[in-house]
Length: 205
Image (cartoon, rainbow, N blue to C red; front, top):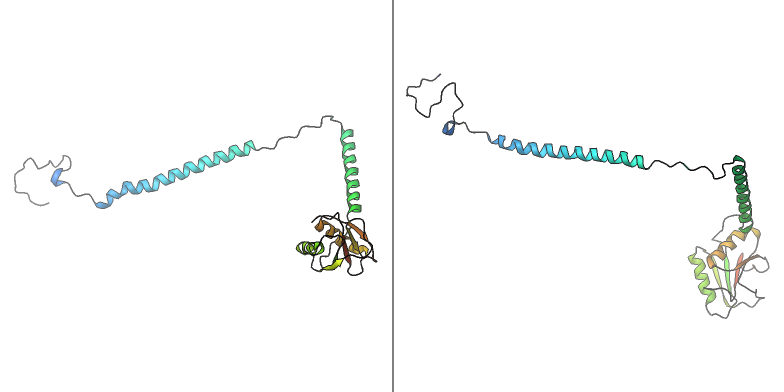
């Protein structure tokens, strides 16, 4: 302990008293002033993240409870015999509809590479050319447009002739692309190509 040869004055503190003040206080390190700021930057985001997670969990639990599936009410008649009869009748009706669809639409897949010839059986100039373009846009890749007016026996309405039964799906696809026309199997009429179209006055572009 160093020797102190000077008498005490008002600036000297007691040995057992409080720490010196004023000019005798030790200088605070600079890093201590950053501690509160660092604490705020760390603690506040953690608290915000915790609150958001808690609220999100409560919201998901409430949503799961509100979306519980509702129980379907029992049938009005409540009879087992009637319900069985209704299901049997529905199965018969659906099978009958399936049979009608099978007979209405030919089985098989359309072949868009099949040769198709378009004849103009009307007095509208360029109708066959525009119809050929329409078929090409629909995906048919082998379309031939006959020049001039169709001079053979003309059908009463627009008809799509196909040479054999296996071409029926393709002929049906042609009719769907045109939006009109009756399909008919005729090897005599379909000689220039497997499928021959004769346009008549009922055909609308």
